[in-house]
Length: 138
Image (cartoon, rainbow, N blue to C red):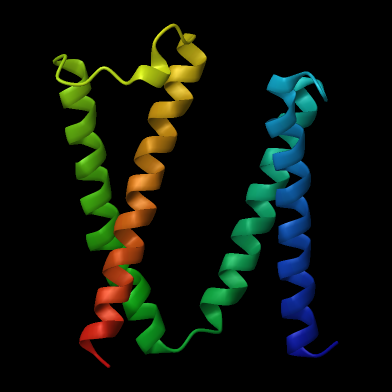
């Protein structure tokens, strides 16, 4: 099997595992599918393990310049996004912001919304820092 075929197979497997896991987890609140919790946990753990394997394969095939761009972006962009998420938490906690989507929600839903907010802020910071790194070196 050629390197390109291995890469396509790995990415396809990762996308398939992510899609299947997301489908099971995402449709559960709508009552469409209600898999047992152990199955969801097993699929999520399998998707994470496969994701780390694909990421390791991808990282080993990057050149030094691309590696530096990603390290810079995760350090500065991810840290900036985390700081933004922390500021948002403090602002909500002191009563400066009452998110209308969270009123009347369960503790589980509020926790998930908070965790996703910080993750989105980190990824957005990463993307901005990564683009800035490449823009500065064009």
